[in-house]
Image (cartoon, rainbow, N blue to C red; front, side):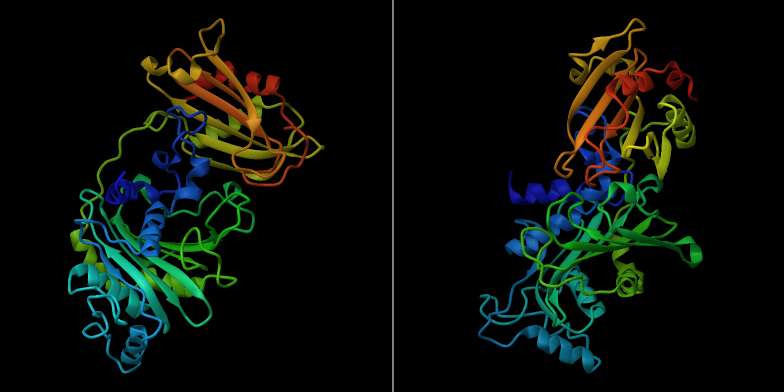
Amino acid sequence: MPFEDDLGAALRQTGDTFSTDNRALAAAGLAQGRSVHRRRTVAVVGTVAAVAAAVVTAGLVVPGGTAREVRPANPSTPDATSRIDDDKRNGNDGSKDSSKGDSDGNGSGATLDDSPHSELFTVLRQLLPEGTIFSGLASDTESVPNTGASVVQAVWDDGHGASTISVNLSRVQAGQRQDECPDLALMKPGTTCKRTELPGEAVLVVIKGWEYQDNRKGPKDWRAILTTPDGRQIQADEWNAPAQKGRPTTRENPPLSAAQLGDLVLSARWDRFFSDIPEAPDQPTQPGAGPGLPSSAKILALLKDVLPKGLEVTVPPGQRGGYVHLTVDDGNGATFVEVDFQQWAPDQVDDPIFAQATVLPDGTKLVKRSGAGDKGGAGIVRWTADTIRPDGLRVAVTAFNSDGYHRPVTREAPGVSMDELVKAATDPRWAELK
């Protein structure tokens, strides 16, 4: 697939990538079928930033688009960004001289012109503390039509190691807004989140975590997301490496503090760019995502009731939409249990993922799955009882021999047996939830 198509495909998902409850980006969900798992959202919420990082690192500009590149300075010549810093110290934003360079790439300047995309980069440069900008990219909605996003990114060094800074501007529907902290039970241990309600009903969320949520090594990803009542969303990410993926880290932590990252998205200088960003389109309804689902509280209450007695809940439950999870302990180690409650159309019950299902007397199809966990550590075991009823109601109950996703094993096998999972998933009370 051509590079510009890859970029376009990712940017078209921007409305979803800013959502903590993102079904569209979760790909295969439970079993490469139509279900979409929220537990994987946190690992891919930065898709647009990832694509921008790849563009910057590879030194590419979208063919035929309106993205603009800042090329690395020639090591044998003075760095143009030193002039930028001098201009900033002297009260000049440096946009006139230091945003241009030798067109052959052998000079020390940038290839940005006076387009609005150059202005995006100029704003980012002005908002960063003093330092050296090695390369960067700015792209708006004209680069790939119907994306609804503007992206600007730079490889920047404050003198303590190169880092990557990315800012995404978008408009989102109410259901796509990332104005709540993500479910930390689904993220790498040590991830933190702070949510602040601002005057005027805006919300600022700051997350300190990692690029990879599993046990792979990689850079830290610290993120600030500002969401306004009218659906404007500004997301800034920073990594302690010169690229989001594929490059070694250069420092222990990303350069900007949580306060500085928050100030970056709170700057009023981004406001003028939203005039070119269209309203977010309505998102298509996914199986299990439509109206009419029972509340998460009701799903959680029933999940607790259908599980074996005597299990102690050791971690507060997490819930969103039709997905609920909790961590329980039978006295021999923690077990992470989750349920996916979805309403499919009746004509979808013959989906291929249920082709080898056992058909129960009431017409419910049952598939039992067991295997390694989802990119977890060594020894992770995952058991699932997946059911779909004739009316399209799908209930899948899964257990892990750990206390959460991407966590170390706590026992040899899950503390809820496969038979107990089947009993829980086939309980007739699921069909009675309203």
